[in-house]
Length: 373
Image (cartoon, helix red, strand yellow):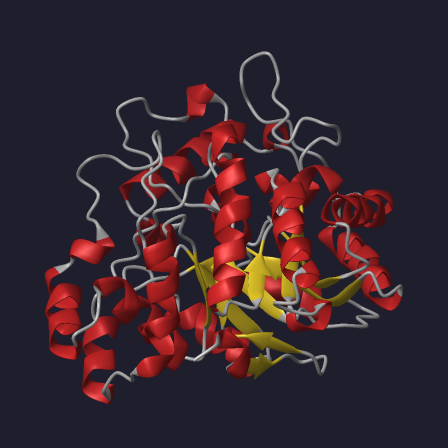
């Protein structure tokens, strides 16, 4: 069954295919692979393609989409394409130019969904991860509510059919939803989500506010150096997941993907392997029993696989050398926002270093301990 037959309605009246194809690449030499894999994905039935300016492969992904349009496999309206605004373009005057730049690379007239990629603003410029002489990321002071207003203008201009956010926690979502003069609510919030990090509380909040949760890292297999160590458990080797896969005569990956769909989550699956890309389409061919869903709920351990470059924004003097840093994609943003601060409108230097060091140590020890503050 093609994913185009399975869609979820968004709060602005548009709809999004519940199964998407992820295109993130970690190495320059993989860009060509992202083009070939995207072609294969469209051939086997994927209609939702997820990319970003930060991935630096929109030109290749765009070529793949255009080639499939030109050979008659799909029409433009069949494809749901997502792009994302990177942190160096949060200033309101940079939002539309950034989207227009992506459209030129893609050779498309519009994107179906445009997201604020990450809720921490960085110094504008060509360098995606601007650093000072000490290797610390250079932050920028930007009001994300102003960024959101610029996103709304992109929607009004027809450059993006829908707009949303990524890597936002509840407090940051509330900031947007409670913004005076809000014209459009975010249609979705894209976050890391898998059985080891099921995001139940965030999912409940999003559903309550008619915001779709989109899961990346859904197979939990990313093992980026400097982010996870050899002791990090591999999700797809989990004995419970493997036993369930055997029972359903499916792969652990399909069980993990199906788990998200039955929770009402849009799920992204990334692969360069043609066999795996084809296999992922089988997620629509079976259903998990309710008691098995509860068992999978029990696998949650608040474990994140995806990398975080943002901790580099913390001066090395504030990071305990002996600590094994938890790879939280929203590390610093989550810490500060959960303590009723807004990182996006302040610089690390503005914070009391003793206080920040205390918070950072607590995160390394376990985010649950933050409640003692």
